[in-house]
Image (tube, rainbow, N blue to C red):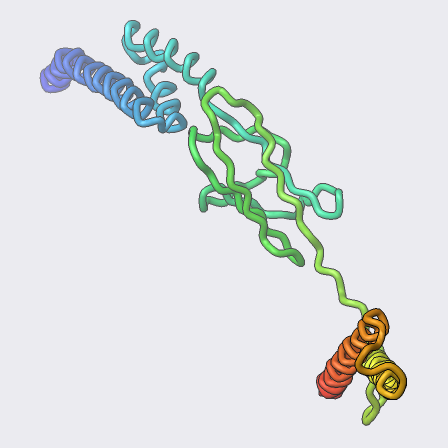
Length: 250
């Protein structure tokens, strides 16, 4: 009986000391959370800072610390940016897509809810079966709320079947024939002009040389120039015809 009373008294005496120690530990934790929140906020890590402000806003924290944290939390919520992620395929919502933000996959990211992010540059990667992945880079600005970040998937289209060409046969190229015809026509014209020029030269030589009219001599010179040009054009066209024919056959 005496032993039980001793244990009871010891417990009653030690209880206030234990409670005081626990209260002191909670107070230190609140102050530490406030200090961490302020440091994180200065480093623009607003999401982590918000979590710390929430922790030191607890009812178990001292009144001064709790009020400071609650006030800072309200200011931070007004500054913290947020985005709304979405994806489409052929103009319809792609609800089956998976989304990762800055390398971390976000479950239910396409359900239309707002997602809080830190200010700065981010990369959202959208993936779905049957489509190539889509990456969207964006910069979140302080105070910017519910910014839309959308990815548009493209479904690969099956290319149209090419016409089957019977083995051993090839389509007949048209360009070589066009060039060849133009070359022959140009050479024929050049030969015709040259023959006329030779005939006119013989006529002038037999009638008025060397005192022929200058205009007749100029006309004879023009015929010779045109003849040479036509022959040159014809030669180039025939060469081009041969080259395009060889290339088309290959």
